[in-house]
Image (cartoon, rainbow, N blue to C red; front, side):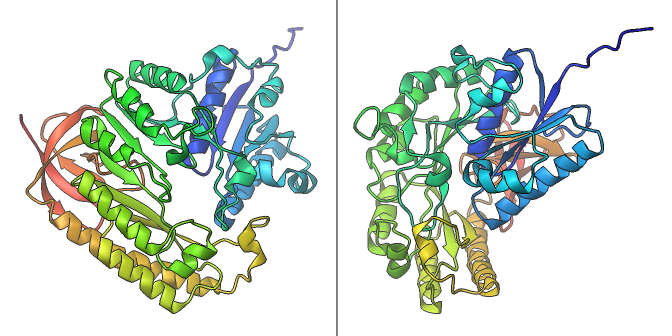
Length: 437
């Protein structure tokens, strides 16, 4: 009689939520692989026996998606398709005690900072020498670079400090080393992410050191694009603008969530800035970095928001004509200071206001894009779909911004840069042809 052979574990990591979660999943993948454990990301073949769900707990919709994903994995386990289901990430950090009671079939729960504990479930050791090493789940030509963890801000609507803790910066040396490793793997673009970029360095260097970090990263050979995400507007370090202007491989792009434009809403949100101060900052940014792309995100339906507040927000958008705008509907989050306020804007009205804002931005975006017709841009080729290539200019980040649809009789290489002349423009996308030279 033959002895039964033990099948080796294979782990599938499912990532929900933001790019910061994606980086955490990539780090976990790297650690598991270094411990000789087979690991895949978002596996559709169902040839794995363990699932790790990396959850998001940001707003109601994200929580719902996370819970549904866990339930889907538990159903696979019930049917004998999985041996184990582990849960990590923000939802697990925030609601672990409740979730353990509701979903006892989950084999173990982990918070956002418990990677070594999770590895113990696999009899794996945390390898500190792998700092910055990870298995990329993005296409090989771009990657996210998380420069800090947590947040010290006290915005009244935000539960992220509850899930991610206080701000902790990584050292410039570690970040440069990680960027160099990424370039060796073929990465040409890094997107700097943090809960709050502009706070970088205050904890370890006792001053804001984002400009110094940017100079150090811009010196990394082979790194062609560096992109900035999630800059806080209050006390924005203006030296950052000098670096963006001076260094060719730093994209003229800034993602700066403003959340609102009405002073009463900004005060209630505890944003530490007024509409007038934001206006001055926007003028300064555009003056110091001509042609910069400004992206922002907004919230509709915050407690106490009136039609007048929305009218003011629309007026602000008309005045400043942001290149990119995203909008969230307010989510009433426990243990935030805004939770003490009555959630008095009905769900339908939140949705209606968000739609109004996006319709206005659609017009603005269309007008801005029309001005690009006939111009030539450096474009990074991201993928090929339905016989055409899709790429991005330096003014477009992955997934959230414009794509450039490229028609080319010649074969193009994914991850290469080409010069593209824009021939057509739509609300959110561009179309163009490759030009030589």
